Length: 320
Ligand code: AKB
Image (cartoon, rainbow, N blue to C red):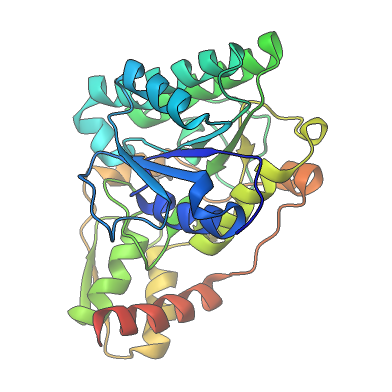
């Protein structure tokens, strides 16, 4: 196994990003150096990590105990409520999305951990910003519960990095598309659901309108970006709030057309719900040149490659 000097804790390890990131970190560092955590009960098929802690991340005492017990050096703090669900539970969204981050930043300040990764989101932008090719340094004006929590988190990261030298690194993820684990409660989730319904039902009703473009990223590229930013030399990380990540940009109509190339009889209807308003406040595309410059961000998947790969893997997974 890898001879790792890092001991890694992942929160939200059973979520959409967590599942795949955990597998990758196990490949790199060895299962014995990776501790997954989540709210679910232990099950031997749950994760490839060497250890699993059933842990509520808002229970700081328990989190600190786990960090001490395993002598954790690096935390990937992924546990979060996404945009749709956050609108329904604003107080809990704040409690889950901001407070544990602040505790981890304190632990890093006190030398309990050396390095922290925290995911932000394109939700930080909001009203009044340009729609296309939105830069790193624009005014942030989120109008959603989720966006407000992510902006607050970014500011805390920047504060602890500048004031206390904490090595915290962050990415503003766009919508993430993966076939292994489904997302839950996000505005960009239509771009995952559509594949399942295309294969299982032959039709899909989209809760986002046909011409609404949003930035999206295939999970493989998202995981690579996460590893790249965490591997970069400390001095290369010039943005300590969170880096823009653009990925690709497409509308539901464009995605449906791509799926139809392989499933010509596939039909899509559009019935926008409350998430349309959230999508309308987000950018259609993002300028991520800063991440490309600082830590060599690059992508493998565009719309066509991603669609082909999703359909190929989901056909096997769903037996279709
Ligand atoms: C969501 O839709 O809430 C997330 C995000 C873009 O952060 N996928």
